[in-house]
Image (cartoon, rainbow, N blue to C red; front, side, top):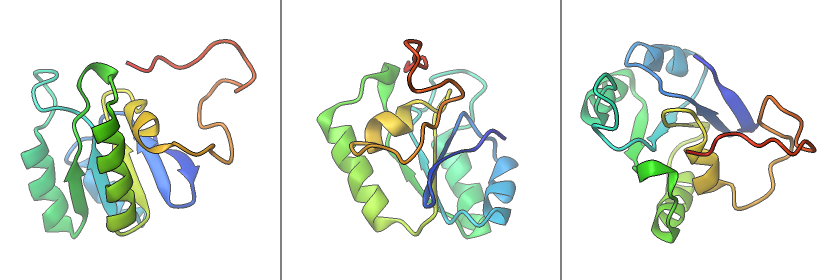
Amino acid sequence: MDLRMLSDQFLVAPQISKADLALVKAKGIRSVICNRPDGEEADQPTFEEMSVTAKHLGLHMRHIPVSGGTVQDADVALFKDALGDLPKPILAYCRSGTRPPRCGLWRKPRRCPWPISCGQRSRPDMT
């Protein structure tokens, strides 16, 4: 599982599995936000499957699906509400881990979360 810490209370990751949720819990994360629409890929677990496992483990879970990497104002508002409402720390995930920062980081992160230098022209694939 590839967790990227954007702040002391917010992490992002590419797609996680139901089995990963136990590791998420063990790391002290209390809430999970899924930014993937159900059915985006045939082999991804549905939000319902993930939510049932999360609930069994005592994790809070929220579904804020963002289609095709296009973040709308409503997505940002829902994400902001979730960040305010859910117990922290929070892990947000999508297929590649790039949608959650686009939804939630309307403020500048303390450090660059990407494996490239923030000063380089190359940017992560935000799709």
